Image 1 (cartoon, rainbow, N blue to C red):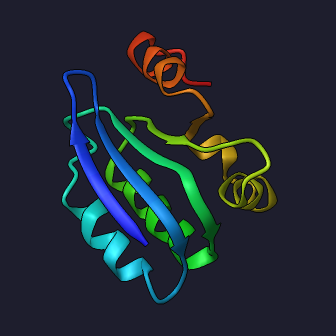
Image 2 (cartoon, one colour):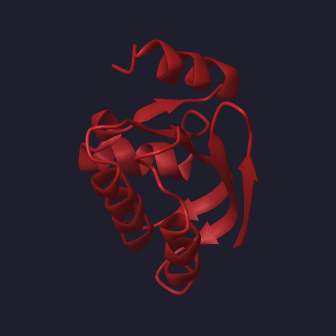
Amino acid sequence: MQVATEHTDRAVVLRVSGEVDVSTTPELRKHLDAIDPRSEQTVVDLTAVDLLDSSALGALVGLRHRAGGRPVALLCRENSSPRRLLRLTGLENAFVVGSDLEALLTRLESGAVR
């Protein structure tokens, strides 16, 4: 797994790639904990993630809880491992989910998050 954080004028984007499972989730959590989702728009880019397991999903839910009422966006491809897991667990509606970064940012900025 690889993680890179990009701060833009619109959001902080955490780009994750590779396999995110029980062995790599602690590293992901470290990067997620460095983000303050209450003070900046937050997007986690999962488009390059090949595998996302329940431990990684738990880390993302933790980020969502830390955000309070502020939305957290997940960028992921249709029919990808992250998207399937979100649907299977019923957590897709806990996040703002989409496959286009610009569209996600526009939804976050406009408040049209559902």
